[in-house]
Length: 502
Ligand SMILES: Cc1cc2nc3c(=O)[nH]c(=O)nc-3n(C[C@H](O)[C@H](O)[C@H](O)COP(=O)(O)OP(=O)(O)OC[C@H]3O[C@@H](n4cnc5c(N)ncnc54)[C@H](O)[C@@H]3O)c2cc1C
Image (tube, rainbow, N blue to C red; front, side):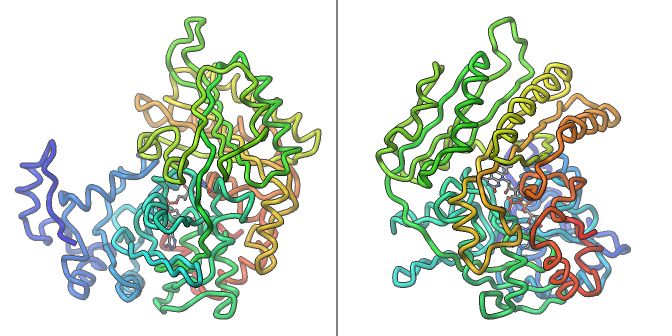
């Protein structure tokens, strides 16, 4: 990879600054710069970038979904091209006591999960080789790039993998479970893993599979990234990808009760695993003007097959503003509502999550969650750019498919139906530190106001660090054991961010 300065806005200044030697930016003291100096010597300056004005450096730090992460400045960024490079990096970081982070798609909004200040950022983007074997129907890919890249690569074979519902999200999604439009048929993204190449926290390169290091394989099937090692290659069972009947239906909030009822009904009673939905209630900072200009409900409806029958009739019967349902290939599906939507939603983003059962009581709770969130949104106008409530059904067909492979993943998913609700807050850019903390605190209170369903897992892909989601996992005790075995001296626990193991 060539590390050249960008040609846009501050291109000229960057060009001049990028011509300076690396030593101009690397202070001689401190564990981060020390590790970077060491790494530049062993891996070379094609792989290790210390100059913050290089286009690649800027691309790495400016592409976080939570733009607060872009404030952190790594001492250098390593772009490994092999598992061996990752191993060298881990050993050098270890030897220097430097902090570090592993970045795939950069969508986890929590501080220091894939970002680091004054330490080493391992950006996996160059590890992006892809292969497909039509005989075994296994797809192999590196952790770099996005799920959209992988889907595009596989589409000519009429195959895909279970991954993100939006093309722009990175592969770290799968290490934390990964909920897809195909999950009701095949389980979570991690349930399709067949073999992983992993660089362990000691820098050893190992294989994790059903037969090799099965304990590590278990933990990586949904137990979270950056805890047990760095995955440098995924081998995954691919799935057929033909014609989908899919689209978005947009409603005014006046329809909120009817839409909530239809979603509740779908959570409880839909038994067709080819039908998948996600329901998004969204509030914007625009004035209402009695015209509902500040809010909308968007349903994403996806049917794996050209004919959805009556699967979505309850939704399309409700008066709506827009309906784009039609025939799409999988690329079309993961680019709804429009290509690049994952990138456009960058901002001061926070995720929180709750989970509720699919019982009558649990479905009634949906209305309470909605009302609380809407009241909060009204009271906090001016403090956010967007806030949304995403309702994600988990049917029994999903939990059956998940538990059918090797006894289930790290969540040990209890039988469906139940549902996750993801709360998004994109805080206003105008909030200063105290006001920003205040709105975060009140958003936390909003989510905590209704206790999560007992015995159900809080999805780590949608969670905030303080929610301590891993403890809600059926496989938590086993995850703790794997963590203690592979990260025995607590190197990853102490030197990079990530979920805690209390
Ligand atoms: C717009 C948007 C859409 C989303 N859609 C979905 C969805 O459809 N389904 C779903 O389940 N979730 C979804 N999510 C949540 C998403 O799965 C998480 O944000 C996830 O962490 C993103 O992975 P990433 O690779 O992009 O992010 P990163 O922040 O780069 O990685 C996430 C975590 O995994 C670690 N990690 C990444 N790769 C590796 C590796 N190879 N080895 C070890 N550790 C690694 C990182 O260190 C970090 O802690 C969405 C999020 C956003 C912002």
